[in-house]
Amino acid sequence: MASTMGKVVFVAPLCLVISRFMYNAHAKSVQPEPSIRIGIIGGGIGGSSCSYFLHELFGAKASIDVYEPSDIGGRIATVDIGGHTYESGASIIHPGNMYMKKFTKEFGLKHKDKIPGQKMGFYDGEKFVFLESDWVIATYAKMLWHYGWDLIKFRREIGVFVEKFSRIYDSQKKGVAYSSVEGIMNTIGGNEVVDYTKVPFLKALKDRGYKDVIIDEMMAIATRVNYGQSVNMSAFAGFVSVAGIQGGLFSVHGGNNQVCSQLLQKSRANIIKSTIKGVKLDTESATPGYYLTIAANENSNSTFHTSERYDIIVIATPLHEGKSNISFEGFPKKITNFPGRFHRTVATFVDGELNTASFGFKNMSGCPNQILTTKDNQFKINSIAHNLPIDCKVGNKESQKPVWKVFSKEPLSEKQLYALFASRKEMKVVDWLAYPHYDPQNSLPKFELHDQLYYINGIEWAASAIEMLIVGSRNTALLAYNKYNGLNDMIDVDFNQKTEL
Image 1 (cartoon, rainbow, N blue to C red):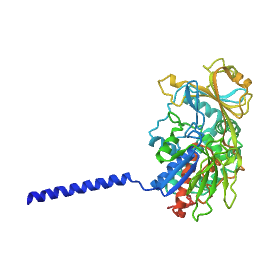
Image 2 (spheres, rainbow, N blue to C red):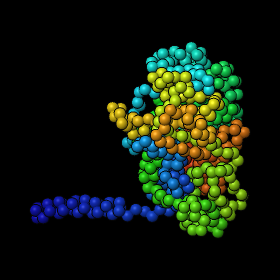
Image 3 (cartoon, helix red, strand yellow):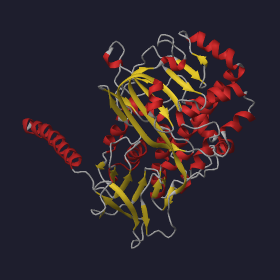
Image 4 (cartoon, helix red, strand yellow):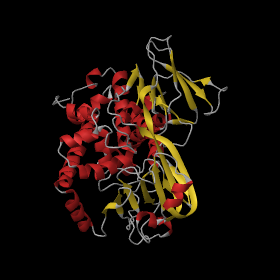
């Protein structure tokens, strides 16, 4: 009897463990059917990060399709020249960019090695008004002597600006979303920051008492190099551009576009290599829904077909003149391209030798390899600088092979190229509409175009940067989630005044 009881006591728990194991295994193998269909138009940093955030919020309930006819990454692109690969699009990340720092850490991506030997000079078209020293302390002393108290004052002001920007992370961490770009600007810094999008950078600097020398040189260089524009651009974009020339900047070893690929992989999105030609509202249903008009490729005009119905659509590509061919059908209020234009930028990559004589030097031993221009010049360039491969490593000389990267407003003529370069082995040109033209009179688009139809890239009209688009995509994901679940008290919260959420 005792032995039988012993067997029963032993076997029962074992059966229970086995049955639980089999149940858990079955539960893991049988995933719930997705109940929400989401379509994202665009596979750049905006679309890929929005896919990641939507998956994070909705979980297995959502099925996500990302439509991208070209390479994943969009304007975070690369170019091959001289046997190596180089960043041709968005190439730098600020140390204060919390989302990009999070992503690189989460995905196990490393920072590209910093290779010594980069030397900077500010060129006014006739002479260098400032040359970097081989010693950091000496360079800072020269800058302080040249720009005076304005240099310290502006460094502090940029620090405050970056700190204010971080408020949006706190707001989004609490789940707050905004229906407009202006709402995000207000969260960052109230009416003052909202006004930054409506006044020229030059006026904002003058109002703060900055002298002409730092405005005409350092500030002009920042706006020319980062946006190809002048200090007459909107002030918010101006401050972002100057933050882009601060210390601690980094890029991802192997290319920044890896972040986009990893985001899509983590979100378990279906990547569909097709062009979207139109968005059609489902007018026969009581609940919001959309159909997409799909072309097999950009040049296809005869093979259109209609997608299955989506509950939520996110547009992660610019809807502005010259950038979009997407039509909208069946909407009670007409949706058209937004006003404003994108700014043309030409990046010319040259594997060759600089004509140092054009800049007043006999050879490269004294000539800077990062030449940043303060104003329009005879070469018609904004900058000319050494660009290192995406996989460069300290200690590996071959991986450090630089090419020259020239930024200009228009393609360079043969005469200009001859003046700039003593020799050219190979050349590649990337000519694109890279970012908005920042007229302070531009209006800021809304994130919500219609019920459960969203637009990420409106945030670019405050400033265009990798982190800005991620902030916009996080906001879009939160907005879609909050609206879908009726969390209206988490939309358009005045975060600066509300003390508890």
